[in-house]
Length: 618
Image 1 (cartoon, rainbow, N blue to C red):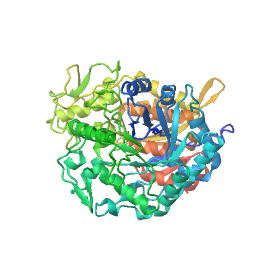
Image 2: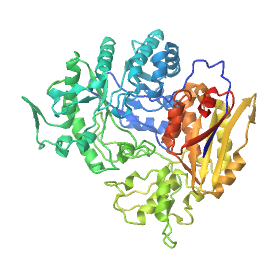
Image 3: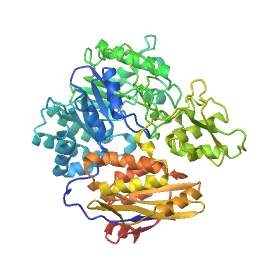
Image 4: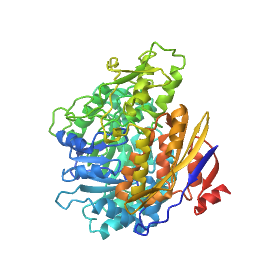
């Protein structure tokens, strides 16, 4: 039985227009044919922002797309002269569509605050409204809000006197446009998007903004048996695809011209196009390898720099192209495939997976320098123990850590048992900062200083980050409560195990300089977590989080998420559940959110002031 304890926080009168936001900055430049890179930060142990900016500079990268609004990232980019496009998450589209004041607040907090007027600020060039809001798997949930949100952001930029320097765009997914026959000449936008696309293209043309789009040759190759690997990799010997009198030599041109046809059919044949995402993964699936990725990247860069364009747009390549991605991210959703965590040209620690000329001055990729790691220790299976339960323990470890390299076609797929068990144990051990108790696994784990890596299967050692200073759960929870007090946040959670359940909430408020706890669940939770090895943690974040200042909210969320994942003996539910909780204002969407949790909700216990919770209970 799942109980959710909710506590109410009175609204903060100083923050009447602040709302929930996990900002996903993106990046473009203004030079025709410019090449930039996506920088994602969905990592359990992210490379410090200052190191990443050094990495970008070392490789002559002048344009970047970001996927969160961590103030440390924007501060690191300040004064770097690297062009940035800020993004707005899909969850904010309804609010921005309905409220001009909300749009003005967002622009103030995220554009005006950091914008460089030729000084030491951030070179913000675009605001991307939504992150692929038309993705087919989302259905139509965001369709009604995109254009209104874009218009309100445009109005807010005009009011802030930034409209002439910052453009508004809407990133569109690779499945926004289709051609059932595979021929570019028969390309069109999905029928459910025709009206919205006319509105979007009209808006973009009016404000001289480009059409942002994802092109994914890797996924096209996976899904279409008529597309060969050679055709996808720009191989000169690949069989050409004929479309009337036009001949296509590669998958990129085929997809690009399908989009050109689709926009032309709606009356916009000359719309500028920027490729917002394109890349090739290096692990987690068949044909996802570093060598193939190198071949693809070299072919793509050579093709772009040749400026030959495509059959429908000769000598007119995309105005910008953003490689996806800079670094591997072990926290990315793997709903569409295990390869999703391996798009990086660099490993999670900033080391190049392959070398090629990015075409911006460097002949070879330059690695991140002076990276700080945890000690050279690994967790492996103890072969002297009874391993009959080892597979079950490994599955538990993989449910909360990254084991995608073990999947079919992955770099560690071919290592034999129990080597794959050791990989799972080590992944969990590293994610938990090499704590001794995170290599227990019922006595099956063994800490070693001998690198267990085999051939191309790398048993990694995690990065040293500020998170790893919390070695004990008491420090962890005290830190969380302190953080919540600072940001005036409340979190309710429930723990279920085979030996019973514990329900409690973390809440605190700051009164002057004194931290006063409304409840103290630490001791009860510690006893429970230490005595149970099979626990599931479900989390809900109350709408008080929406009062957190926008500039601090993203970092607060990521830190709390990470800290809770470090609690010993706790197996969290799908991390996206926590993310969705944060992205929800807990009113109208509350029931839908509860339906997505792994464990069924059978009861709600709430503060009597939370009227919506009482309604749900009744």
